[in-house]
Length: 563
Image (cartoon, rainbow, N blue to C red; front, side, top):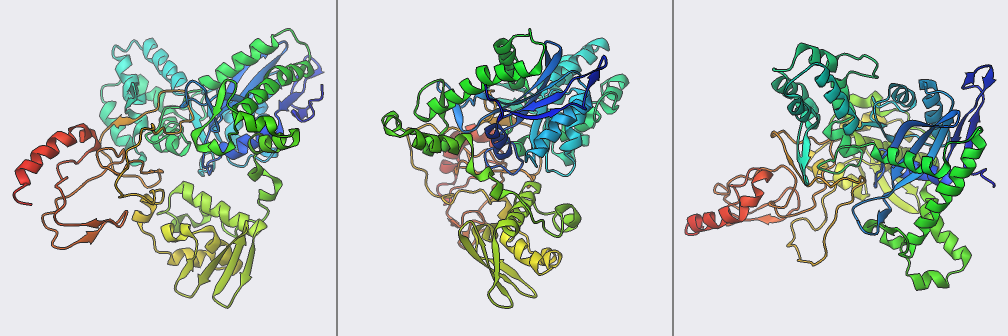
């Protein structure tokens, strides 16, 4: 069988055992790599997490499996559950950090420049991947499995004979009851993290505190892991929802079980394994995804991608060529082609201008920077006059004005954020990038409402259809959180899904309107606010939303005459 598109790398210098050279191999189709680049990136719109499981043995070598929950597809019986799909594998004869650095280097070699990945805490695996995809600068996200860490904590507490071990684990990792998450230390905002740690750890044993603060055989101490790989902001930015679900690595382990069942374990050469995985896993998986396009098989197209769905009768009437073109839109996403590669970089990296970007969310800075570099690589900037430029990219043209004391762009993002890739690209060409950022005026209100629906503030229309949020994990989506009140962190994406305050999952505070003497406009949706508005002031926390209707009626009776 021809598996030339499947096996992407063979390295004979990586491993040597008993005077025999055993190669490390990396296998994934071009479509698999495109999925990783498209969905497992920090700047992706629809995000998935690359799950990596280390490892199980097949004959004389080990196999490491890569998988992700594909956001385009859902199970036919559960439209909130995305299927775990195989997207690559590595075979080795050892399990050292150099083996896993080989795997991460192969991903980088094939165009993966930003990565959201999850592990179960294996030292060699984490060392190998963080060497290639470090998390310090925010370009990559490393997620740590909650369940595996919970087991580690329970073992440590059991060995120390701590009586209240279950409560300690809950205080650190939090817990769920149905769709409600009771937050723990890992859900703290970074600025409140050590304050909350001191509050919950006063009764812990010194040995357990040392265990959390010591590095041991880990990439970093657990105290750092809690905030850098499991923290609330990290999980939100990784696409686990808002409020975020916990990350679990069971998907990768289940995919390993599928591989083991499909190929067995009686093999002496890696070529046989690649051939069997391609025949028994890759091809059947692709057939199931194609069936989902015309509503057959085990999967269906997710609600946000219904434009890919085709009626069975239409599919039947299509020629093989027409079908293949349509399938390639999903299996081989067009926007991951070579024409989107970045060849020209901005003269400054975000890290070099950190002092000027402190009030911009990290994820948004990366998006704008990448947009500007794509414009420089594939777009065109034309001088209209001394102060005006026409920036053309992907058949769209925008006018950019850069004057001595101000700058502007005609695109929608600039209206929201007062900054965009068009302005950065034009300014960089004139060596004005740093000077431009110094003059930029920033409004936190614009950042908060960047993802607000244009219809925000309008009266909602009742519908019989159920509104589902897209979740990229198999667990029950977290709907609400119970936590200590904290200030809003602008580094978190906060899409406003509901307009009524008693349905909104965002923190808010509403003040009395008694002192308002004239009509004013809402800063968020420009809705006209009047002095005679109903007194919603009794509602200060989203936790009280269930009491809203009853309390509102009492307030109506109490203040009805005054209004």
